[in-house]
Image 1: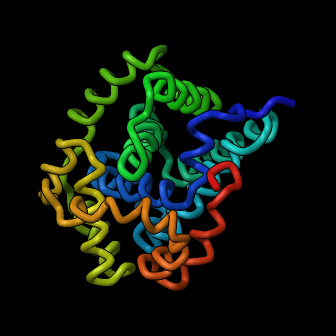
Image 2: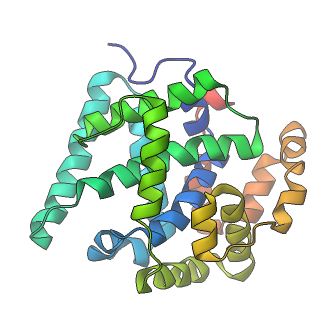
Image 3: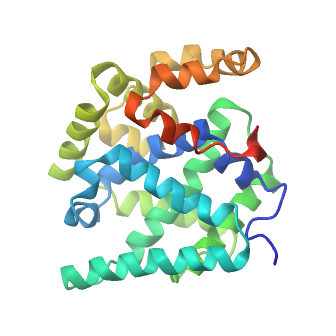
Length: 255
């Protein structure tokens, strides 16, 4: 059976590399905190209780789609849908369609932002590829009203950013949890990373530094890779109890 994401897709490269996955979720963590539907993630308590652990569980779901065949990907879609329906049943209401699109759009958007931050700009064909893969993910999850083209998505993404974000008590609580789980200096690094990744509207709403110190040191990352020091960098940057989970995200396609 055919792979859900074909060999050679830029999405396999992005989602087969632990470093870019961490960046995807660093950016998403900022925007999640502002989303008008973030209360859904507070309903179960999983996100505020363990935001980093939630990151890894979501990353595993993503890889169970990107690196498998069509049938196995559909099984993952069914599992995700069942989890969402169980939460909706407990809460007695339905998650808004726009909120599901927001989540999909975050993963789509921060995938290319993360890759470009530490590697190179995506070609137009790669941007199209990224859009098409995530659109198929959205269809697999039965998310309605998805844009048909990449150009339409760019417009809809901007409209979602302008309409669906608000600074709320949940925003402050999530950032307090980020700081508690990461510690002061890793938390500061998270804020600098988010400042480099997120759209201007998100950066402004969170009052992130538009010119973080981290921007002056990004040239070190390719050097660390060439010197085979990537494992050491991960050991320094990640809390020890999450280190093995980070390394398990690497897939051979991104070696």
